[in-house]
Image: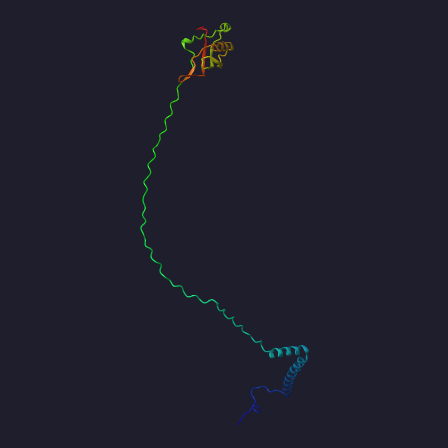
Length: 217
């Protein structure tokens, strides 16, 4: 017994009505018709035609021929290559031993010691207390005696090289003008032993103290 697709029936399948079969066929037919109509509609449009032409042209065009550039020929040098130099050994120079002589050392110069300077001559100061001078004592003012004025006067005297008083200054007074003036007036007339530098008499200053005391007057 032969079973074909036309005569085979699934005993478990649900029976299909003729109306359902007709609807399936109609749907399939409508789908095919719609696809054909849409294709025809698109083919008629001008923009679709331009695109199709552009695609056809691009497919037909042949690619441009690629021309490969050949490298330029290498320039030939006009000058011939010189031959390599021939290396020759330099002649040997005879070495000689240099001779030299040491010059004699010059004599050491003698050291000349400086001549010591002569010592400076000694200076002696002027004096006023020599006995041979016979210088008088200052007069005690009578007013100072009555008033009991006493004191010590220190004079500064500029003595010349001849032994005279060039100037007499009161360095420290006694506190009484009469006593100071009496001392200055007396010493201005005194004689002095002048100061000396070696054997030479020179000007100098000397201090002369004068004491006024009522006990010794």
